[in-house]
Each structure stands twice: as structure tokens, then as C-alpha cells.
Length: 126
Image 1: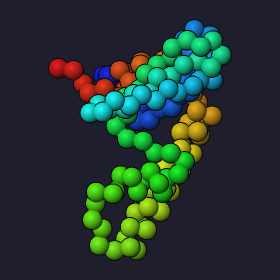
Image 2: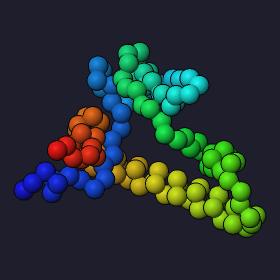
Image 3: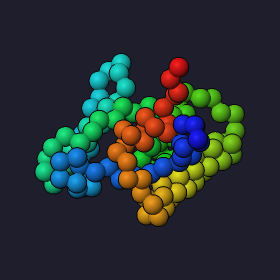
Image 4: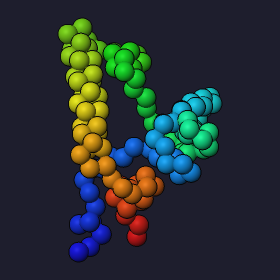
């Protein structure tokens, strides 16, 4: 069985503190002009550094506002078309969130997040 066959098509996991095992975390969002947004994740129980994420995009629970921020630069001809895009975007975000919760509840991936990324979701190395 080659490495490609062992990869899972999707996976989900709660972020666990590597020091105390807690899943309770706080996010510190760092903004610096000209750079991607970084999120530093700290354990709410022991206060230690857990991880850092670099964001390509951001969507809050206010999907309408998040999408409007993305499409400000677009020129959409139709108000109905814009409404359709906004509604579909909100539905997509909600459905994906529900799918992730289902994956975690049904069978959370036991591997560390960096293992999941490197084993299943990294570009193959030549």
C-alpha cells in the first residue's frame, strides 16, 4: 500500500494543549500591515503556548458581514445575485461547521495536528 492510499480524504480534531491536554484555549489575533493575520493559541487552563495559525481568510458567525468584507471590491450587477451568493456562503459555512463537529464527535483523529497536515494534506515531496 503506497502513501497515497493511506491518506484520509478528511479529518478533524480538537486542539489539545501539549502540556496539560486541555481543549480549552484562547486565541490572540495578531495584525501587522502587509502580512497575513496570525492567531496565537494559548491554553486557558495552564496558560502555555499551544500553536500558531496563519490565516488566508476569516469568517465569523456573522457570515453575511464576513462575505460582504470579501466582496466589497467586486462589482455585482444584480442585487438578487448578490443575495444568492451571501445566502449560499452562509449555508456553506454552517454545513461545513456541522460536518467538522460530526467528524470530531464520531471519531476524532488521534494524531497531532502537525502529523495530520504532514501525513495527509501536504504536497508530495519529490
